[in-house]
Length: 76
Image (cartoon, rainbow, N blue to C red; front, side, top):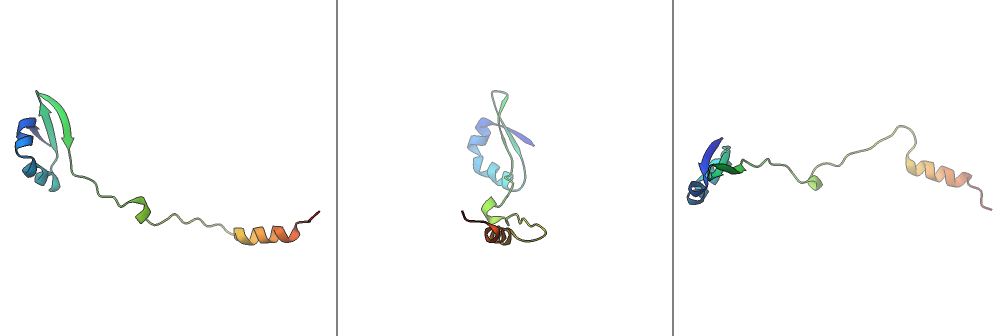
């Protein structure tokens, strides 16, 4: 991780962001104290683009169980 002061970061932000894009991490300091840590973003696809979780059970399906119960139901 490279340490840079705030003034240098402000003056060379474009070059430093290019370094971050290439995998380098930066620690920005001001008055001798760390104020920001800049690292490459982790790429994750949004949850709506990932495959859905598939649930399955053994035996008859839910729809079949509901229909069977309706057939055996007594109407008052």
